[in-house]
Length: 148
Image 1: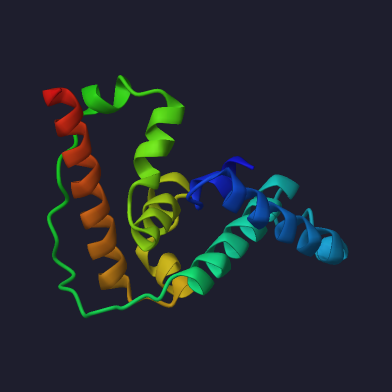
Image 2 (image 1 turned 135 degrees about the horizontal axis):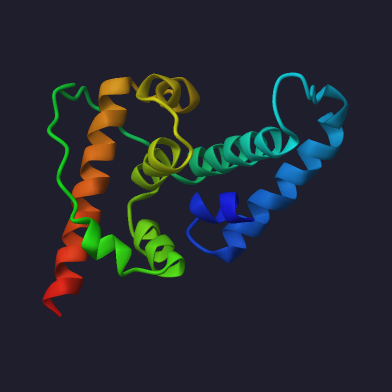
């Protein structure tokens, strides 16, 4: 559920993702190979794939070519450290859907831009731009919170 929540707007969307994911898990459990990785990683991958499928169905992504050379914004760790996990999740959910997904894939799941490109069908440079914009938006939210 935690993985589904990271890629959804609310608990209802996450529950929908989870139901479809578990259906896929039960139908393909015979294909799980413990020699290739843990059951938890395999299940997480299925949930992520289903979340991205649902995201693609809900949203129309429009991509443009973006320059690969983007300076990443600096986010003060003090602002993040003061947030609880629930607040941080809510903050990430304020991002546009594609930025939320790319941020989660890169920062939380640890995928490279090339892997994200393969998963989402978005060019790696565009993925970098979306990540950059997501970080800028999160930084702005943190600065606004600090000003209050």
